[in-house]
Length: 264
Ligand code: ZN
Image (cartoon, rainbow, N blue to C red; front, side, top):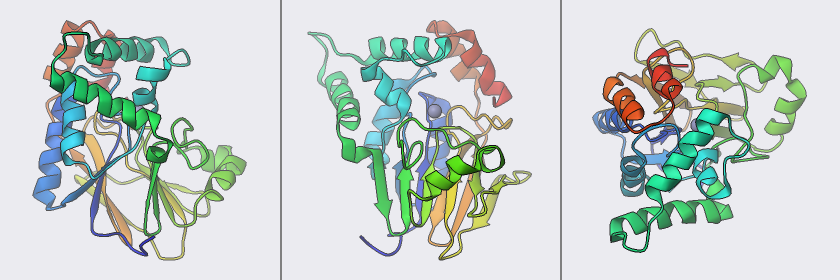
């Protein structure tokens, strides 16, 4: 294993079939001059454009990790809330090829299925960084909440025992950093970017936030750029009205449209 990151790495997570948000984030990554991109999963679910999001990740991400919504397309969504489950079922119908389906549709389905079926695609490590969707002990499903440090320190201790350097996840859609005293640091987004240091020899858990369905009260898309000793979150304004319109037109639950403007 290499000792350092091979170069600045843009980390996107929880795209959730949101074409407009992903397009804006990809443009922002290009503008920032970052060449390498990793995706921490939940490419699909909730939103109206799974095809576009899968195709973009396939074309541009050096690393793609499985999220729980990606997995639910194959595993079923019986443990999901009704809106999330309805969206997973819609997504499966949208993506699953039939007998006469064209090559592009089959290739897209096969890509998602391979992501789901290969256990080695649930984590990625590079230098001291460990990338995943949820947590080291349950990479696909466990939530590491921003409140866990003071409400649930034993849980955070167990999670911190599961990695050695910097663990980078998504899944909660809430950007921030838990330090090795289990304190959560919320990025200050009065500007479009916020940077925190990642001192050598100190463990931290970084959450990169969500591209396609932010839940920290800020409707802008969120992602992060990792460098060897710091992380920079970037917020990207996008027009969510077409996304909302498609959610309604395509028969997905109304609440999934509404929350995009609230960032909740
Ligand atoms: Zn998600």
